[in-house]
Image 1 (cartoon, rainbow, N blue to C red):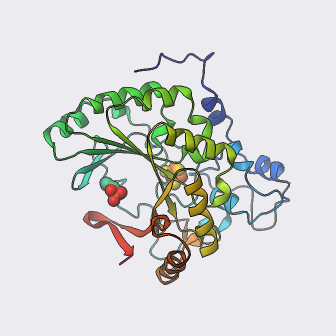
Image 2 (cartoon, rainbow, N blue to C red):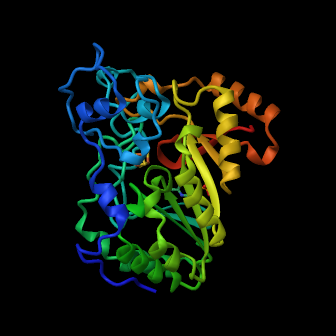
Image 3 (spheres, rainbow, N blue to C red):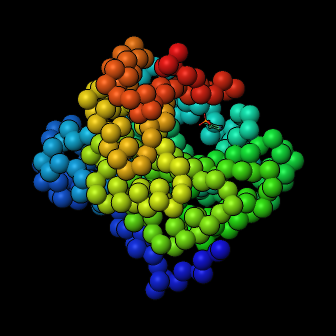
Amino acid sequence: MIPRITTAKHRPAWQTELARAIRSRRELFGILGIIPPAGYPDALSTDFPLRVPRGFVSRMKPGDINDPLLRQVLPVADEHDHVEGYSVDPLGELSAMPENGLLHKYQGRALLTVTGACAVNCRYCFRRHFPYSEANPAMDDWQPTINYLRDNPDISEIILSGGDPLSLTDERLSHLVDRLAGVPSLATLRIHTRLPVVLPERIDEIFLSWISHLRLNVVIVIHSNHPNEIDEQVSTALRQLNEAGMTLLNQSVLLKGVNDQAETLVHLAKKLFSSGVLPYYLHMLDRVRGAAHFAVSEAKAEQLMIDCHARLPGYLVPRLVREEAGERGKILIWPS
Ligand SMILES: *Cc1c(COP(=O)(O)O)cnc(C)c1O
Ligand code: SF4
């Protein structure tokens, strides 16, 4: 079912929240009651500006410049350090993205980049130097993708990625999904999204009504890095997805000063589980320029996994992976 066109008057609440996202450091510090310390110059270059929804800010601890949620979104002077091995396109994927946005690297699954837009700008994002790839006029022409999927019936799962696929309107997204559901060989739709965490308003009745009536299995892979990200509102949104029959998984990025302690990862796993989500992947940081201050060594990461494994049931321990440029793709580090 395709929802009717939303007029400005009937704009869903989540779009209003999205438009109200904070983009000014002064306002952010004002809300949090933080006096900007030295080392946070006001005029940083802004090819990847501050952008964070207000609900996410409300989960930060007032007065704490080291808050783990704040750290993920606050531009800092460290981003200007040039560190050996960190590049603008670490996966060599953005510059070489196929024209129709479809990546078919693994057997049985294909990944479709549907938009470059996001609700939040995460400082560690591997797309941080290409945030405006949504300005692709071909993005509404799904015919080449549909043709490819019909020609390759061994693909049974289509993964929508981005950017954030849920930053598309229901009208556009359900139109695409209806086309995909018309490909008989597809059995599963997977959506990689951070919106249920940073903008839980997105999981509204309109979305739930069309997504829960597909013939496809639906898997939602959310992106949460710290237990403080999951408050009552996020938890409710996640449980609604769960009750509507979707499988919920989480991927995290291992970030220094955010979640590089076993205690934090254990707490996150338990909190996810109580909202109906299973931990799936823990990613090593992509070596993107400007993010080196988030790096955690692979030796430390493996030790964290061993500590988590000792303290959690097996089904709550994610797999530790690293992305590599070119054909190699995801590399499993732990369990090895
Ligand atoms: C990560 C990824 C997938 C999905 O891999 P899973 O191990 O099934 O999660 C598919 N295609 C591409 C290009 C990917 O990067
Ligand atoms: S939500 Fe994902 S794609 Fe968007 S900025 Fe954050 S890490 Fe990047």
